[in-house]
Image 1: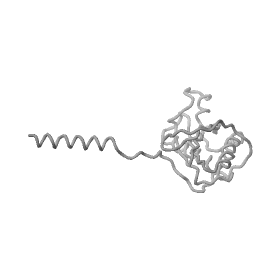
Image 2: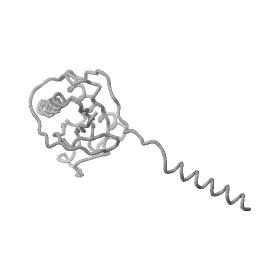
Image 3: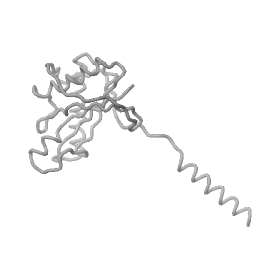
Image 4: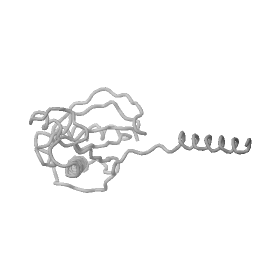
Length: 174
């Protein structure tokens, strides 16, 4: 009986040890090669705020905020008015060589989850291609699609939808 109790306790300890340890998962992103989507060019500026770092998702994320790049309905084309926002990020990356960028593509609530994941990825890739066209090394730019899963505006009208059709930048130390 004592032998069975000892064996049972050993199994419980091993199961607990396996459950409490494990590998940290990396965020699902894709590092894309030198794709060029649309050959977009332009000039302008964006806004940025102060620097500080905090670990998040395994990355040393910088607290530098840039304006979101907004898109038209069902489009992954960067409009003329939005290009300056991407150029501001490119300028920052050129001045901060040890910084990488994650571009997150987002959509509004309309459309299927699958379609919006694809559209979000196309938006992220379009921004990435524009950054590469501005001279940023494609190896430091990751892309991710959130589809319609991370809205910034909760309304069900064009005002909210237009804010949710966006690409966001997360800058991090490499």
